[in-house]
Image (cartoon, rainbow, N blue to C red):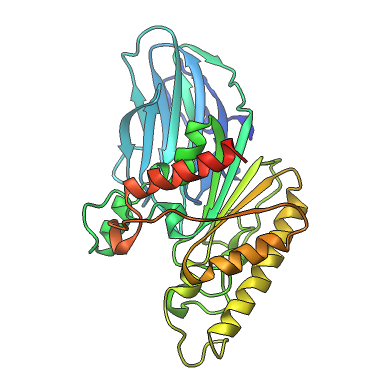
Length: 336
């Protein structure tokens, strides 16, 4: 991961004049802008800083997203498009503190911006985490509508009740004290998207992007995960094929899924040879996932994911489901 001194906060005059810039640890893909700010859009992105003092200033533009502000692990507020670009949390007890900004919602297009942390006290260096995990997937990995108390949701309710930080990926990573990133996009699959939408597009095709809704590729930022967990396939097979789609029947779809998944996995293995891989599958495509794992150039583990109650929005995993998935993945990691 990267540790940057983000200068935008001071340059734009948003922090109190006595504030000192806090070095920032970045979790996830970002685009550095000319004014020192960072633009981000993938789910689960976070920024973290350490300082010794009694107040901290956070400067960020949430736009259409929800960004949680935490100090010492406790959520203090959630920034939305109605929030000011600069907020200050004061009255902290003298001593060392950790400030963190976490992206909660999914942005398939658009982005949010982070401009920095400032403190009246002493900025402190961060202590890099020893473990790193990447999660690649669809709406399940995003945490689509996971905090919803009902299954029937409007589009706005889906947006507002999605909390990626409570999805299985970040849950596992936090339990293991690991840095993480989530490269996931609701409705997308390996070769086919939900109900045949956006033919020709797919998660593997969007994987390299710096922002999910923009075509520009992410720059190499030195990210080297120890583990890569992939949970893709639900959208490929959950709806029947329609006339005019690229596959004449289910057999052809399954064959194409296996072939493209194998290519995607091979690319990831070549790019991240140090990583151990876990592929998750279920239903009638579990055999495909197992075949892809078996044919890989290195040992790859495939597992059937646990039974889900799917009581979140649009029959998506609930918070309980995500905890159970996290339990399963954590057990695999701890007991390979």
